[in-house]
Image (cartoon, rainbow, N blue to C red; front, top):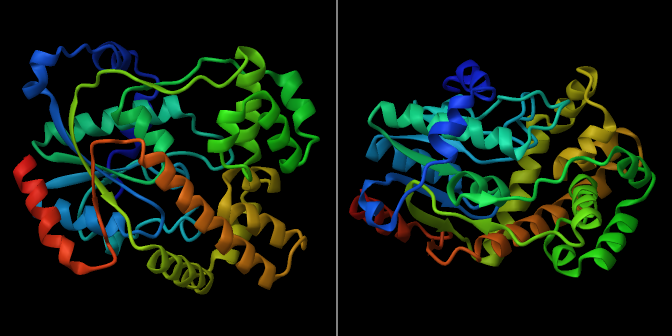
Length: 330
């Protein structure tokens, strides 16, 4: 039930979005007039999607996905994209809205997300923004502003010849702070950070501006050992569901190995496996380690949010607490 896909894509070129949403100013005295939104965040495999569906069914909500890879068509098994059955009739937005051969920019995501929120509000329903991509969440809900540095084709051509390790070491010399936060195994993000650092001297700290939303932040955080077990079990499950076959279909549809590496995590290691750079055993062990490292980076990102109410999803005792929290908010 992927709602309003065509309508959302059309909205990417709509100038009215900028006029009506991005430039809205909300004074502190207008706090009570802000649109209410629930934000569900946390590391991968923590159970965010399941919780979002349960809350949506109970409190008349619809869900906007904030996942940087589930926006792409065909990236289903590898990303653990929620299925029609798992949605349980709840309307979901921003799944399958982009071509995997091309990068969806954070600006495009913001426009699509704002359009989705308005569509939900027009139905007199409450939007739930659910996802683990902090970059997307910050942009959509926290009014984050990012540096406007245009692409540097000449620099990118030079950086393409470097290994991921070399890119990381270069960024470390240019901007130590940014290198401590970034996914050092993601060549696309490393390249972009180097590009910005070269232009501005360093990657500026993300700034948040006043937004038009009154947000209830719910953070889902399983215990460390439970999270590791979930990541392991989910990886094995995805392999049984046909993750490798999905990667072969993507290749057949024209997604290059380079692009698969840019998509990161599962697709990066699938590209290595399909090119016979690693065997199946190395694929499983290396990928599992990378997914857990990614989960830790997600937690580092979301710990910056001082207004998140954290719940341990390792036990079922928090379900009532979460529901009561939402009830009091709305």
